[in-house]
Length: 207
Image (cartoon, rainbow, N blue to C red):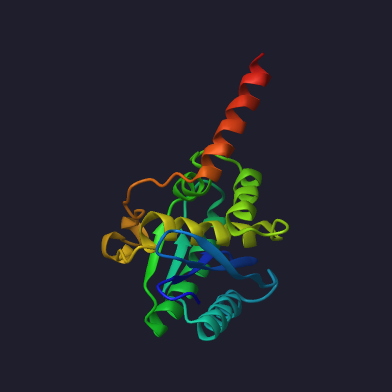
């Protein structure tokens, strides 16, 4: 890891697929790819076993890479109740592992992640994935989508408070009082180019 960089583990929590994305964020907000992966559990397995598997996977990531911070996507009740509950179970397992190792945990909303990575809070998953590839200078989009999402969450944390020495957990509440880290927006040349291309495409569709 580059001197002065912060190592951030982004996690897209889920019981069936839990995405992990690790980056190094330099003091000048340059993000560098380290590793990415997905841990899966079987729906047929008992819930306690599935939660344990997510916890074990998080343990492996933390023990191998020793991140300075862990960033999670905040759970929203926009889908089925079962999906929200399952995601919450997975997030709890991830947080338990982080707490065991003394790794600070921060939450970021989906719109915050999209805005940080693309400059547009309502961008679709494909747009976010393309920007992750560009920002981290990857050759292709990480698969499955949970992997790319985890990298986006890590990038968001680094650019919106985590990459410059700010204690992102100091202003973050969890569970019922969860709210995102407050910070000034960051706009990179890549984000501006993406936004301009999207605006041109929208104008072309209207014409």
